[in-house]
Image (tube, rainbow, N blue to C red; front, side, top):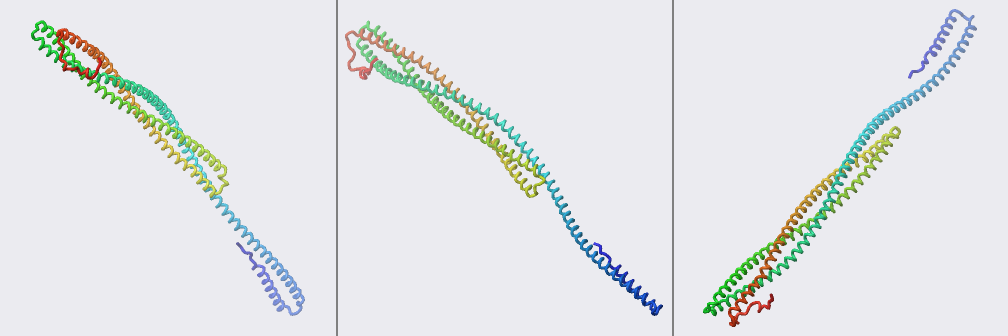
Amino acid sequence: MGEIDTTKPIESVQAAISLFSEKCDHQNNGLTGNNECERNRELECVLKELANCKVQLEAKEAAYMQTLHKLEHTKEKFDSAREAEVKALTQVEVMEKALAEEREKCLELLRKISELNEANFMLKASECEAQKEKIAMASEKDMEIELAKIALDETKEKLEDVERDVEMMEEMEGEFVFKMILGNVLELKLVEANEELTFLSKKLAADTDSELKLKLIREELEVWERKSLSQEALIEAFKMEVNQVKMELRSANELVSQLMDDVEILTYDILKAKTEINEMKRKETEAQIEIALMKTELQKERRDCNDGHITASLKEYESLVKKGDDQIWAPTSDNKHELETLRKELDAALAKVAEFRNRGEQANFRAEMAEKAKAAIEDQLRKWREDRQKKKLALVAVPSVASSSRNLISSSIGENPPPTHHQPLYKLLNMKF
């Protein structure tokens, strides 16, 4: 700051004093005593002028000091104003910087919101696809359940048919045992007839008329022996067929039990798959609720950001943005993880559906094989029934031949009885025909 120059009034006073001294000297030298009064008057004038100058000097000094105080006060005001201006400029720069950062963060937030909307759209698309696949999966599983129920009913019917066939086989086994006993009795009768024939041949050796009868009896006995041999062959064949039917029946029972186990496993897997589908639906509902809450929170954060982005302080804004980022990105990563989990569960469900389909195909194939086995068994049983009818007719024919031969022998021998030491086996067993 500039200072007031105070040397000029003092110099003027000194110049006046020196001028007065010179005048005095000059007057003293030029005048002797005549001008003493004039000199006194001039001295008084000079003293008055000096007093006036002194008063002016004091007034000027006072004005100078006052001006100096005013200047210092103005300087202080200027310094404070400059500091306030610097602070204001600094605050303006800080606010501009904060505003620029806020704009960048708002743009980043908008970008995140757009990414989240895109992820939400992709999630909805995947949900639609998963819903369609689940509907198709549920319809396929329902169809497989119906097919499994139909196969189970058919298997039960086949099992009942097999049980009836088993009962029929047991009856046939009883008849077979009876026929075996009857065959043994017929063999004993054949041995007895041969012994009687030997006895009669000895008795009738001299009788020429009996030779023809004996020859006829021998021919009838040979026919009976051939029929007995054919019956034994039929019995052996029947034994073989019975054993084969037992083996086929055992394999059919094993197949039926295996089909029942497969149906139970398939039913359990279908119930488990339905439970997993319900769990997936529940998780999808929770994910949709979480997405809706997240969208509401984002809209609230965005509205708060748009309303108070100028008046809010930098610290509050940073805490708000940090909170918004935490609330946005944490659910987003959870949603991505949830989406991956849903995709994995969907792949697992599709794999299980393929497995169920494969099992259904295997069950259908086994049902077809069981149907073929049932048809073969029914055909074989039909053949056995026909053979049984034929064998019954053959067994009915055998006692008639035996009775005719016995009547012929008794008529030929007349009053000669057969040996009493050969008792038939059927009498010992008390068997009736």
